[in-house]
Length: 354
Image (cartoon, rainbow, N blue to C red):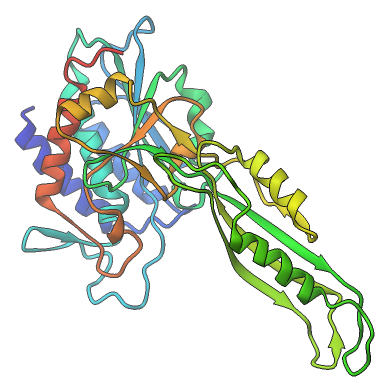
């Protein structure tokens, strides 16, 4: 199959996926769309929950393995869409629809790349293509559920909209819930200990910054207090004030280490919801990064999270589309971006030696 034909077929597949609602944890029908596409091309695949994966035809356990991964789930459409988010309308080379950019375009571009190499007998590596679920919510039944099934992975290429530039590092995410404890009393008298004032002091510390190590590629650890709740009556000094911190870690801090620092610095009681979503990075000396630089691609650090955070192996994030369009009304991707994405992926992998 020539690449132009593959481009037409995966673009048609993208439109079909847009027309198939696939909100996180409800991707069953979209997963079936991928199944049908692979069945029509006689490509064997495996399925677990709503995740689909397949191996290149001449898979050889003696060779290193590259995972090509992107996700089929989407966020929900906002009320400000001016197009039907599921119509997959094409206007002036724009394919408009929910999930077109994040991450339908990267997904079908990686699938086209997989098909290009699928039947080549003497590849220096193996390829696994995986269309995964629950990425937008970092769900337990997404990529994390199939990693044990995939075997040893030497490198993952994660498809997300990066304008086909190389995200060689990605910030981690941790959410910390805090409770400032005071003592209730009557607001008219000099009674009690105001928990809101304790929370304010802690929040000021967060705002001023408590992490010293700055990353050359990812910058500083970003901490943002995003939710606060305290008090229930105007004349009662509150004995509790709750607030939530959104923490975006760089590669110098594991989420556990970042939590320990927060817990030590703040007077409030702190509890992390999870430590799972750590920062990730790949060496500038990695053969794929060097190959990308040879092709004129720019390395950068990404502030946004992807399934890389759940991968216990080396990975890079790159794909057609623009992250600024993700989760926005009238989301779209250009047909030309898909074409360029496929060509760049193929060029990155051609003659790559791991």
